[in-house]
Length: 142
Image 1 (tube, rainbow, N blue to C red):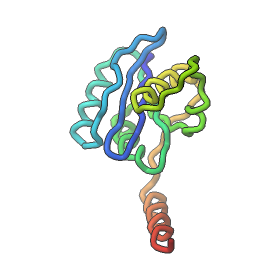
Image 2: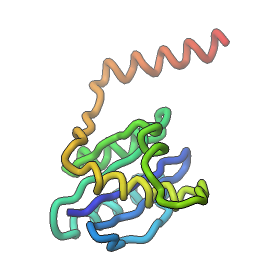
Image 3: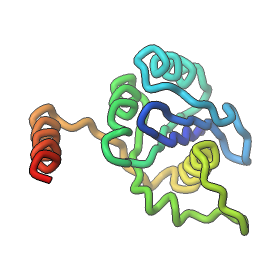
Image 4: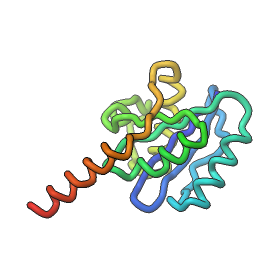
């Protein structure tokens, strides 16, 4: 089994791929949120042996494009509440906060919770449009 930890930001995602036993198949790497970069990542994921699942924090709407692309490509995706990742044990007295550290932590969390997490489902278009309109309305009324 392979766990993909994705720390999503506005313009890029930091991705780490691990398997059990602390084996790092891909050290943390920044992936720009462009269609070609995501397609390259999908190709790399599909070349992996064994079952592979991708995990990311659902932060705002930044995670939606990469989650949708991976899900549409047939890759198991789970969007996790950031509080669960934050509270997941580090086994360290120091807790540096970088995208690379976060992607590693998300991949460790994924391996630990492998069987418990549910697959991400794309929102239907109507719900997505309603959420967008609601956010725009809130923005303009503020």
